[in-house]
Length: 60
Image (cartoon, rainbow, N blue to C red; front, side, top):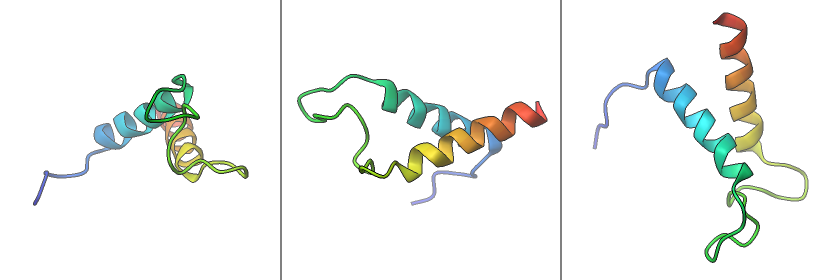
């Protein structure tokens, strides 16, 4: 299945969504309130998202 092109806007939106998810409180299906990738040594997805947003701010 092809969902279309991966645009810079889509990458930025995804990064912002990852950051938002990490600030959400715990829920019945996500006890920690974070994503399934989070571990004691950090989250690669969150690190990626922060990098994307920082890079966008530098170029914007």
